[in-house]
Image 1 (cartoon, rainbow, N blue to C red):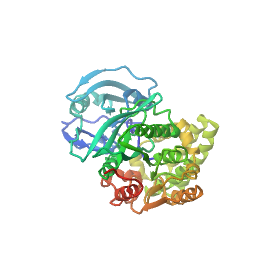
Image 2: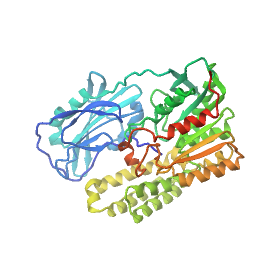
Image 3: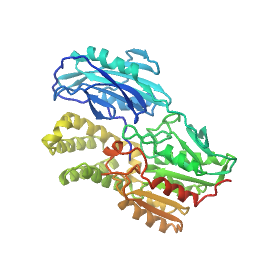
Length: 507
C-alpha cells in the first residue's frame, strides 16, 4: 500500500529520430533514496525512479536508468522480462568488474511498432540488493552512448557506505527460523542485562528490507528511525527483511498476509528464547499491511503483549483501495469523471478477479486505459507517453490483480480480527494519508476494539502526517520524496511515550 516497485524501463514512442552526439559530460551524483553514488549525463532530465531522459526532441526515447532493489537477481527477472518484451532470461553479453560491483551485462533489442529500441542492461548483486543500470536508445545512437554513458556509469556506481555512528545500545545480527524460511534481521538491545521489553516491527505491503527502505519513493527509512528511538528509551527492537528479500530466504511473490503474520509470530517466538528479553512484554508495531498482521496476531497469538498500528486498516482491502484511488487521484488534480472511471474499473475488476477471468480483466484494463488517455489534456499528453505505453502499463497492473496476495488482500477485513483483540492498542493515523484514510479507518478501528471489550486503546490522528508519517502538503505518494526525510515532530514521542506506559524498562 505504500511501495512503488521497480519502475523502469521502456518509454515507448511509435516514431523516433536519431540525435546528433555532442560531447557528453557526466556529473557526480549521490542518490540517497537508492543508496548509491553514481554519475548522470549533464543536461538530461530527471524523470524520477532513477531515470534520466535525454529528451533532445519530443520523440527522443533515450534514457539511462539506475536503481537498486532488495531482491536477488533471480527474483527480479519476473518483473524485468515483460518490460523488455521477453519471456525468457536473455543470454549474458559478458561481465564487467568495477571497483565495487561485479556486473553481468545484457544487450536486448526491443520492438516497439515500427521502431527498434536498443537496450543495454547490467545487473550486480551485493548485500541483499540488486543494482540495475539500463540504457535505452536508437540503434544509430547505441554505440556512442554505450561508450560515453553506459560504461562510465557501471564504473562509477557504488553503494554508499554509511558512516558508523556510536549509539548507546547493542546491535546484533540475528536469524529467525520459520519452517523453510529463515528471516535475517537486526536486534537492537538497550544497555544492561535485561530482561528488556521488546517490539517486533512488521513492514507494509511490497518487498521490504528491515529498515522499511522506500526507494525510489523516498529516502526515509522508517523502521531504522523507530528502532533507534525505542531502543534509546530502553526497549529492544527486532526488525527483519521480508521473506525472500535482502538476506532472508523464502519466496516473497507467492506469499500472502497470513504468511507474513506467520513470520512475525516466529520473530516473537525467537525473542521468547532469549534470556535478555522479557517474554511477557513483547509487542508488535505494524505499518500499513503490517497493521493487518498486527490485528491477526492480536486476535490469535497469546504471546503478543501490546500493539502499535501505523496506518493499519480496519476495513476490507476492497474498501481501502477504492477510497485510496479516489484520494490519490484527487491529490493529483484528476477530475470527477476520471476518478469515477477508475473506481468503476476497480469494482468491475474485483468481480472478475473472483471469477478468475484473467482475459476479461486484461480487456477491461485496456478499455479503461484508452478512455483515461482520451480524457487527458494536451498538456498532460506531453508527459504521458503514448497510448500503447498506457495500455501496456494498465495490463501489467491488471495482471497483479490475479496474484494470491492481491486476492487475499481485497477480501480480508482486519476489522474482524481487531474485534477479537483485547491487548493494549495504539492506533495511529495520518490526517493527510491518501493510502489508508483515517476518516475511513479510525472509526472502524474504534468500533472493532469496543466490540472486543478492549479497555486499553488509544486512537490518534496526527493532522499533518501522510502515510509515512512525514509532515505533508497534499499527502499524495508522489510528494513523499520531496518532503523532509523524517517523521513529523510528534510521531516518535507519541509512540515511545505510549509504549513506555505499557512496559517495565530494565534497570
